[in-house]
Image (cartoon, rainbow, N blue to C red; front, side, top):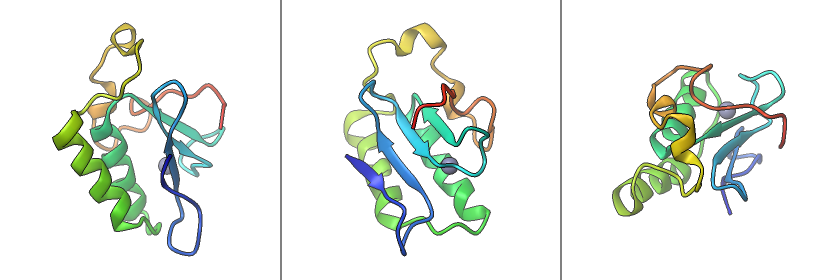
Length: 105
Ligand SMILES: [Zn+2]
């Protein structure tokens, strides 16, 4: 289930992966092209960063993350999230701490 896909209305492809992370796939801000987030706030601030860099990000992707934060909470459902130190994805505009990169996309 993707939050948004590359299309005329989106320069970003963001989705929840099988491990429960939220991924920004094909991301120009990351060598290797993928950011993974443990928190929805981290993913949300990343989308806003794309907008700040003049990428087109559909409002429904932002709305959906905000809604999920309210309804199911900030953390993604990755069962291993506790092992990584949970707050890293919360840092706004922190590219190196905002996600982990294992090269999968
Ligand atoms: Zn990105």
